[in-house]
Image (tube, rainbow over the protein chains, first blue to last red):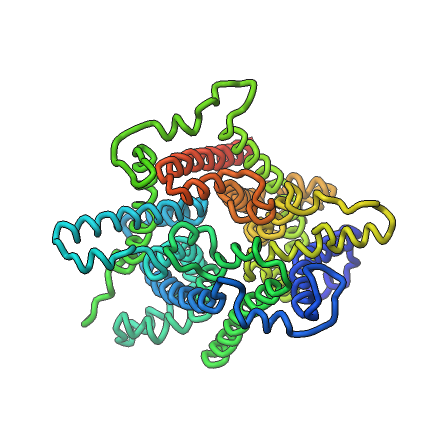
Length: 296
Length: 290
């Protein structure tokens, strides 16, 4: 059947749609390739074509930093936050995925809450978390005043930060994706292997560690990739909930109005390479998992 | 059995607690603070409707729309245009991938090709339009060297046009994925049955494929609408900080520490988004009953 269909002539609509699809890919990739090329301009180069020579000049300028902003500190902060978000997204999503396989009271409400978080306009979530931590700050100050801890009161600035409000803001964005992926995984999951393990006397933890986890492994890696890259590029949810130190995308957004040299393209090329590295490493990890577990 | 499995509620607790602390409480605080007073220095926890009144002050004048209504009109305009464009694009591409690409391997490859740009920074994808659309950009250079235009076209960048273009560039993926998903679930024998019954390609598309892709279209639409309604980054960067949007109003107000009025704006924005989504789900249900 399949072989026969391969030999059927393509209808005219196929070619029209194929051309349309090709044009869409040009539209998707064209601009990014443009700045990739332009970031290798010579020292005299500007923001547009024609290319004035080829060099790594703008990458060198980037390495020295861009104006008042410490790009490298921002990059490190984004990496740290991304990795923390990745770890927590994996942990919380897998646990919740397991919970939803059982009878879970209030499961429907929790599911709708997750969906609501996914489609909530980001500025609203961001504003809410920002407000929450401001009110917490006020509370902490009042408390310190009441306790008359002068030293702590003088040194207290804010509870907002990468590890608190920003981390939470990112999780409201990554966890819905993580949970939906876990749903997709467990929908296709055959409980027979798990039951076999249980019949052979495995504890729930052993059954999870040696049977379930290897089977869902590739998807867990996928959840991690989603967690990292969604956090790596996040602006809207961090914007009001970040505190004093910005992440790379937020700095980048500021740079769009102040930096008018190809150095900003070099930065663009660099962050794109980090994203592609994340995808590449994930695919490698998946290939490795497949080989070691002989998964289909 | 020596060990009991952990109870479900304990496994769900981290998720529930995260959403309770970082989603439910913040939303409740927005609603609460939107009814608070404020001065230049601090929030004053006293009930007032001043913020809502401020937002709609002058809106009763029908001849000249107030700032708030104009901002909503502008945001809604972007919403409708971007929705229409991404729907047509997303549907066409999903249709090609689902029904014209024959091998699953090729489908996966082409599908991945569409999603890879999604992994790179949005701001970078926005500024990557500058060398193409700018005053001395590639498009103007090309058109001028071909002698088609005398002076560079000014409206390509930092305009409504570039904002819509960037939205479509960034978010069409959110349409493609759910529609593609729905289409892959359509029983292929239904298409054959339609063809055997003498339906033309268009008839099959209109009476079989589109109704059965309904869920995907709806999910994609909700994504696009919530993104565009709340956006302030794309409108800011691609509009050259000149175009108003609801999200941007909220952002500007918080930068002046006017949290209560920003919160009131957020409540109104949320109400509008919920209304649109509600209307959409009604629309789809009605079509299902017909």
